[in-house]
Length: 251
Image (cartoon, rainbow, N blue to C red; front, side, top):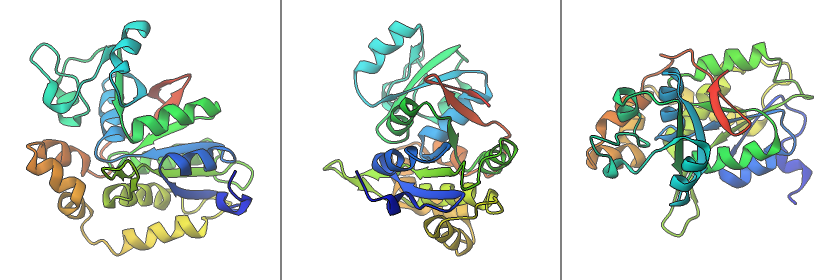
């Protein structure tokens, strides 16, 4: 177990990266906010806004079997969609695909983190650039952000080919946008959380930064510019997807 100082004690809003960071903050925070701008939490916001219940699931072929067990539709890879099965991790595709009651949405980063975090029994919120301010308002209204009920904001990040965490620009800016929205919480921000605001303040054009970063360019060059454009829309949504009992629905 990591040292107690690693969980940033004494602050109302805290920040860390990836699955390990979520596990550490999940031990002490009253609520976790997961940020995976390209594209899991953006896809969750788009789907939940349409009334879809989203089941997070780690990346892998078992997602289809799980979907059968829970009576849901399983999302497939972006390039595996068909006219008959248009549901994938693509926010643009989810915005136009027929709305289903339940969708299993696997991803190697944000979905895996959310699925693991749900085991703590604490609420898990899906945040992105589209709903960062709404998430901040919801956290305030729920009374989170004190030293007794701290918020843990997790930037999902990406992965290197060897499976290790690659910190990403888009998730840093997404997490910073949430932390900016809760910067007035009674418990204040940890140093780690406050430093994300410095990155946000020094970014004059957040959408341009996301389009131009490695993750954004990768999607654009792969033919999925529409997903990036959906993800860079800032504070266009009031939907707050909250994960309870393994399912994201509107909070």
